[in-house]
Image (cartoon, rainbow, N blue to C red; front, top):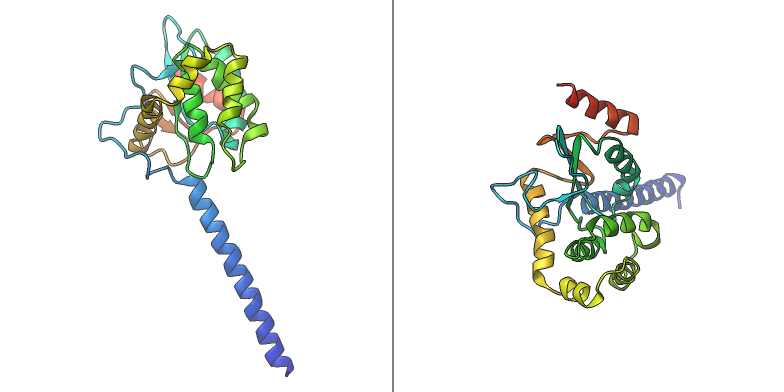
Length: 222
């Protein structure tokens, strides 16, 4: 085999490897960033907040509303969660913080997690299950087998009535409630998680607590 022919074969192999890697990157990126369109269609009257949206703070005189569309299995949501917790404690008397479901298709247990939280919410334990799933995300996130049984264990640890929890998880209306949030998100052009809205306007997710705090202070000063 001539040296030229050998070099051409090596170059072709490298191109093939690069193309394969690029294809994998595009596939993974697309899967992780596209909403689950197959399971929820956007609504034409999409709203950032609805009457039944889950409120994490309920100040007597709310001066601002911060809404997060989230996925409990999303690592970025898990990373920003401590910042959200710190902010809602700091501004609990002035700002209404709201969490809305937006399970992403690239996560095996995102919808299962949202259904578990909604089932807990039906017993007045939304915040407790919401916090539990973020606190334990590294234990169950990014795994391919269903974690429904693990989430049921968490429900028991939170003192839920397990018969009612099981009934809620298996009732289509519970998943419909999750899907309703997702449909609003899609109608509002939410394309990934976390996505924040401040007083109805979508904002780029601040990278640090200080940046998020500055953004809230700026809006409160208006």
